[in-house]
Image 1: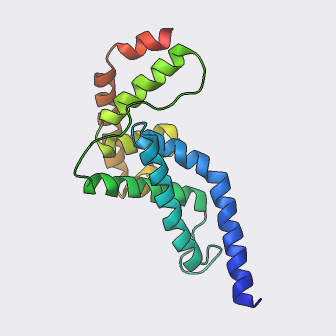
Image 2: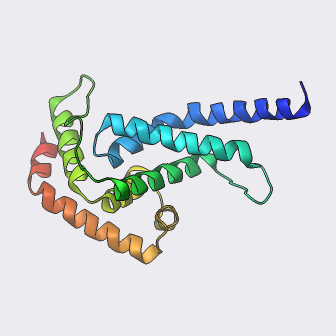
Image 3: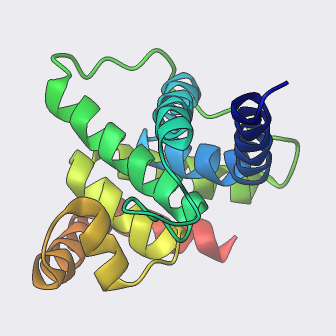
Amino acid sequence: MGRIGATRETKDGEFLELVSSRTGQLYRSACLLTGGDTHQAEDLVQEALSRMYVLWRRTAWTGGRHRIDNPGAYAHTVMVRAFLAQRRRRSSTERPTGELPEPEGREADRTLRLTLLDALARLPAKDRAVLVLRYWEDRSVEETADVLRASSGAVRTRTTRALGRLRALLGDSLAELAAH
């Protein structure tokens, strides 16, 4: 096998390592972005990974003009941007499933999670994206701004407004559920 074949195998192996280490985190974030729609979340992760693979094959990840220091974080960025683009294109807000399957556990936690997912699903796509990035993925304002292609001030404003909308949707139900 020539040098090009060996390089391709090395790149493919590195990509498989990235996929195996980050798919769970991508999927959990995608579930939150899609409001608990597991099918759409799987599609979103698949789209992000396929876009990453195309870049992976073309890009010199360790140097060169297209250097990306953290491919895992870049994969999250690709996924969020794909989600937002999908939302802009979508003509229907129909959801094929109404509930996120839950493992066996405490009923209060399940009810709390479903209530939060339902409220999150009612928010506009950009509000949902900013809350997932800031509070689920624990990204800084600057990192969130970079992913959303917005200014830091816009992210702060959107975060404040999105939290206000979420509180309005939840009302007193969240405090009641959390107390159980």
